[in-house]
Image 1 (tube, each protein chain N blue to C red):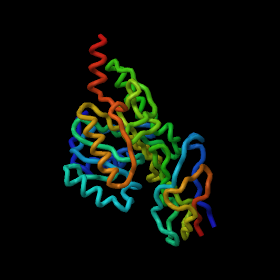
Image 2 (cartoon, each protein chain N blue to C red):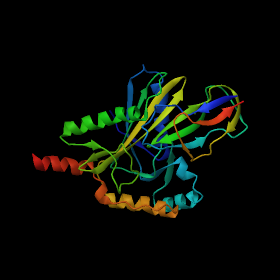
Image 3 (cartoon, rainbow over the protein chains, first blue to last red):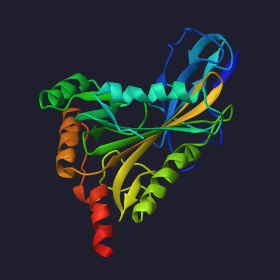
Image 4 (tube, rainbow over the protein chains, first blue to last red):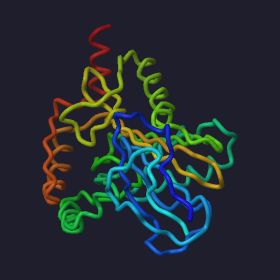
Length: 76
Length: 211
């Protein structure tokens, strides 16, 4: 099983980030390198890549606050 | 550089076409687009998921202000003649830029342009402005342009799409009313003040008066 993790060092600690969109549903198969989710921080959005192919397990729901380094889902 | 006259969603989607061009550029190179839209409101995907969105959008459209959805963050903004949109795309190669870097490329261009006109500008949030954020372009503590960015990954390249909406001229009070009417229909409580906004024309007038 591989974790899908929010990248670190992308924004200041005082800024709040939220997981804005999942592009795949829980249980769907995704390819390696696909943008699986989008995070929003300070009117800036960025895509989160699937580190490898696999079945997606969603751990964080849309609009929930996320932090740098947090695991938002897994691929198995 | 020609000003692109756009018609609603097509204007917003034009930034995606800019991304395709940027993929063919060397890392670090910038591509710029200047564009103006027909009168409309532009909101975010998060707001478009509001259960009252369709009702609010139809209400706004019936009054001549159709609502379109953009991919970047923030809240609802207004597009119309007199609001100049500036979009830039920069290719960062295989490095993720920080949020700060994403905004910096665009803000440097905007502030340099202000300097050339003799306008003293600064960057920051403005309480009471619509779609407020940390990276507004401000004059005299009033918001003149709002900004947003998208960091996207395509063909192993990290690209930053940055966008600014500069209020060149027009009726700010009317802009605020359009946005607040739409947000009220969505049950979003908002309180904006025209004193929190300014226009490029007003900033230029002040420079002319001072010289």
